[in-house]
Length: 106
Image (tube, rainbow, N blue to C red; front, side, top):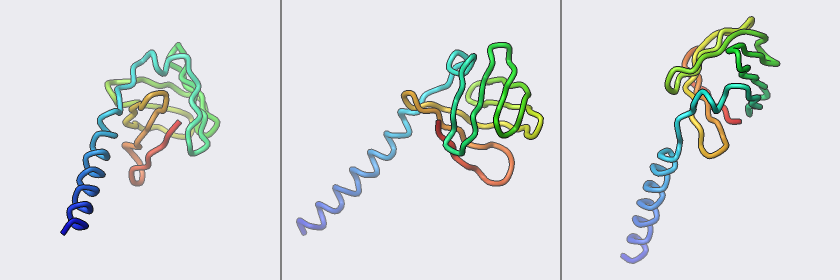
């Protein structure tokens, strides 16, 4: 019986912790991106220029804008919108268009 209680407590603790991890994800502001270069986990390097222009080693030159947690990019080789959040100094981006949702990190 004691072993079962320990297992239940461990599972409960793990579920509680996993829920609280997502609670730490914060809102990304315009100031977080404007004039910054982000190297993503998929090898893409994005530059969010101060004038609203965008440059990427994968999709070329274009524009970017942030509306709430939605980052919209219109570039030479791709256009779409991603949900973007941050956790400390790490950015997380989830694709909102295209095939499937894919999480990326800085």
